[in-house]
Amino acid sequence: MTRAPRLSPGAPAPATADRLTAGGPSEPGTARIAVDLLGGDDAPAVVVDGALRAVRTDPALHLMLVGPIEVADELIGALDPAQRARVTVRPVRTAVGMADHPTAARGESTVRTAVQAVRDGLADAVVSAGSTGATVTAAALGLGRWTGIRRPALAATLPAVEGPVVLLDVGGTLEPGPATLARHALLGAAYASVAHAVTAPRVGLLSVGLETGKGDRLRRVAAPALAAAPLPCDGRYVGLVEGYDISLGTRADVVVTDGFTGNVLLKAIEGAYAMAGGPPSRGGAPRAAALLGVGGTVVVCHGAAGSEDVASGIALAAHLWRRDAAGTVRALLADIPHDLAPDRHDTEVAP
Image 1 (cartoon, one colour):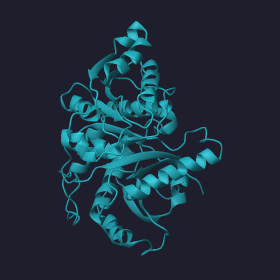
Image 2: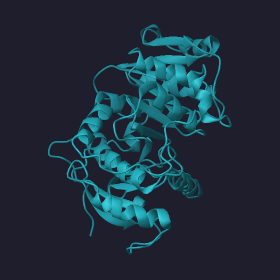
Image 3: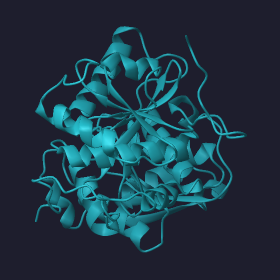
Image 4: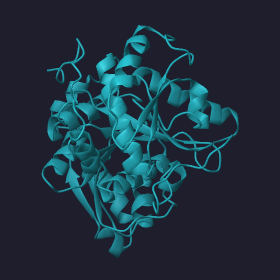
């Protein structure tokens, strides 16, 4: 038996990956996005092209280009005068490499400068396709973390048969403990409600079977923690789910897992689409994810993102800012008691 996506009365259609592309509709309201020009495997070329697509598509979009002047000038020179007026530049020549330790983000770099622009009120959101670890570190240090959230999560939205499914974590925290997974369940439920208008989101824990007790030690310990955690937005824990449930969307609207497994799964889905000749017309695996748990709007694009993926990431950041997703999710979590003990290895960002 199939079901239609469960939306709030009068709510807009869910913002699935296909609607957040450079060719999709834009929402009203100015959005100022700081873009890391040097982040990503194929930067700066694909970032420049993606930023061009985004600014040409959304007339209320303003970009702050963070990177070398000559790279920014290449982008600005391709715009007409009216579009040029919506672009500013922050000159920075240093980037955090994909192989660098995340703490490299503590020094001067494009991603750190982009985050600082949000902190200083010069931009509304930041987008980077660079090192995930560096982006998470820069955001946590520069913007702070929410009360009760020690380890932020990256949330990606996949277009399932029955409506959008939020998968988290997809790379923010590779080795979480059970309490972290329970906190991420709260984040995911609130995010699904705010960003995608899902009512009473169903939350599942990814495992290798549906029966109680299935999975590794982390899953076996985390399942009772998720079952006991009060969820926002009338969310409810539905138990264990399997990989195919993410593509179907019939059992859960939010699927919680560790960042290592989530990242591998996301890339496996990308590979499956490639083998099938490309993603479905309604959108494939997203190459941009929202960072939840930090004091601002941060979008992390896939390191191998192409220009369309970068444009989609910029559009996602604008969408989240215009909905005040970060502020609303944070407020929803403030009404939920945070009585989960920290995980044994839960620490602050490494020095």
